[in-house]
Length: 498
Image (cartoon, rainbow, N blue to C red; front, side, top):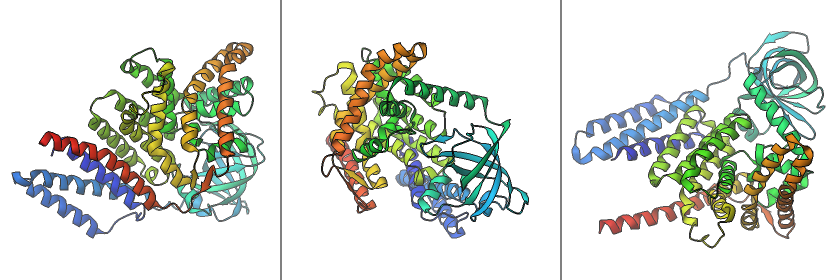
């Protein structure tokens, strides 16, 4: 077996075992399992001395090692919480927590969500105890407002999530408990990183300028496209995007990064594809920094860069191996992403779609105009959706019958709206009048996107709830996709062999 084949065996075994172990999470696994895998690896090493079976034996060793690495990784993240954890006291009692805000506050129309690292807890009887861990504090009063890194005393009811899926989602961010806030007392001390503080200020300033230049819902849509913010979309627009399968365009994921690549392709349409490589990499890095550089954003940007590399290389096998290595390293750090993080899942699927299907769409879309890079944008967007949208369907239990049409209509508009909206906002810092004049075209395109979403979502039967769609049906869909990729390769191999 070639080194790339051995790497594929090791990484596929690791990722596949992690996927299966989500239903068998243990802080430690039975010794019989470890002994069995060690025996398989040892026999494989012994058999490598026989030239006739060397490839199979080394492959078996790689598979066994991948499985052992998966067991170790899952055991590491499945350890019980320490006795000092704040979750040990999350039984519905009223408490006061002292700590600091660890991330950008999530400001919404009716509440603010704070990721809050706890140092001390004061119980109702006045007893003070040192604790550790993070909580998610929900403040419906919305005042006084805390900033990133600010120390505070927050009072409220401390508990755990009643829904297992939400508890699993919170585990991704190391959130151990929930606090329904009744009172917030800010302190003057700050603990946050200066770099993160500056990035949050820059992003908030940028979003405020968008609000000054564009009316709703265009301002919220543009903020979502450029920064991933979803803080202000009206309820009817959010529902229209959900029913038309367009929600993915305002989420910081691999699909979102694909749109960034399409924007660069649109802006640099006059250059050959290969000469757009470095500007595209620079744009992805700047985007990651601009929106805060959180773990989810960095992950999405890494996957986006991989997709870009896939477009630049003529050896698709190398691109596949790069994707596997990147996914494995991310999961080695946090395997929970594979189980509970829809953003990771969609990023991974979007990059796979970009790698495997973009080239196959060139022929069907050959009649689409190349003006302003529209064909490139459409191919990039649709190729990501081929693999990502079915998983959205399964995860969120909604089948949009108008999604294909909505995405075909919107895909060419989104990169242009982002490019013009970004330029208009930058000009708006110089002059609001100049920004509004420059933003006239961007506003029209944003209004058009909203109109498409509203019009299609209003059609009878535009979307149906799909709780009946099973994991087996989605697995069958992806199996068909794999066959569509494998059959031409096998035929090609057979032809060469003849």
